[in-house]
Image (cartoon, rainbow, N blue to C red; front, side):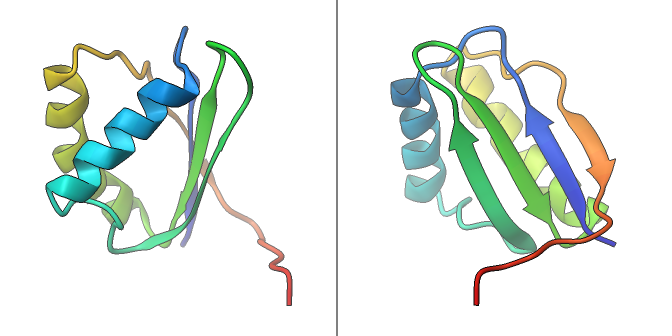
Length: 92
């Protein structure tokens, strides 16, 4: 079953998000196996991220690799909210 994980840090800029994503790519962490889609949205220092994974296990596996990266960068992504996905609709 797919899950959506929403990260709502107290403060995050687009530049900080981009730096995390760049580091993940450099280390071969991203793209993540089991990732259905990821969206970063908001403005200023109030950026949020929602990620849909094909399973809870995919999210947990990504978390194991992502946590050291954000810790090394001194960044607090906050406590993610996890939701079971009922349905997704994709553009055809």
